[in-house]
Amino acid sequence: MTHFDVFNGDADGLCALRQLRLAEPREAVLVTGAKRDIALLGRVDARPGDAVTVLDLSAAVNHDALLALLQRGVAVEYFDHHFAGELPLHPRLAAHIDTSPEVCTGMVVDRHLGGRHRVWAVAAAFGDNLPAAARALAGTLGLGPAQVEQVREVGEALAYNAYGDSEADLIVAPAALYCLLGRHADPLAFAREEPMFPRLRDALRDDLEAARAVAPRLRLAGGTIHVLPDAPWSRRVRGALGNELASREPDHAHAILTSAAGGGYVVSVRAPLRAPTGADALCRRFPSGGGRAAAAGINRLPEDQFERFAAEFARAYPGL
Image (cartoon, rainbow, N blue to C red; front, side, top):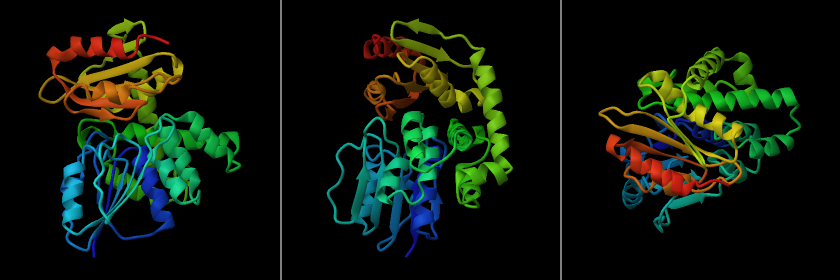
């Protein structure tokens, strides 16, 4: 029997899987990619009797591939917090899905494991821009303030690395990054001992500095829309910039747009932190849009749809 671990290449997917494999070690084929590379189940060449674990990937986006695996005799365990649509009712599917705005996949896994490797869930929550949830979890572990800040830096660096339109935009491929995480028992050891960590942290700092110098394209009553230059650094930093803006202006929503290959834009949306809802519904109004209530995106927004997007954004977020 072959086991496949299929996961989003961002902090949440990485840290969710790290928790699970610390608790349940297993040799597995890794299937992952950049953050927006989420239709991954179709790449799984599983046969009857094989098993698949899925983490931090929308079941709605992967519905047909999921159903095909189940019908092929493959057992699937699914952990996620994104919009799931209608899940197949099947005896070979074990689904652990919670779409609450203040929950990430790392927290779903933490709940499943009874908190056995919770420090990774703290990093996942920080990476998904859930600082209140992250600090609440950290409070159960007795971590000091400096340790909490170190775990925050790890989560944010892992999240930053996943953004990009392809793995060519990233500092390190997500599968390779997961293998680096596998050398360390916890995020604190990763920060202390892994040479890749300062490289990610410093690249994030430099890219954020460049992004802060770009003025918003539009300032609306309920938020801002930013359009960044066409460059690998801007594609990498769009998520981190969105999170920073959300933290700085928690009553406002924020959209970060970067140029997409073949024309148009890739869109990343952050709902207001004080009312973290509606981002997924907004983005699903456009083809290739999806995500979760607090943070969502559109994989390709045609240039001639920019004005429509701005109008829909303004309607979704008129101001608190």
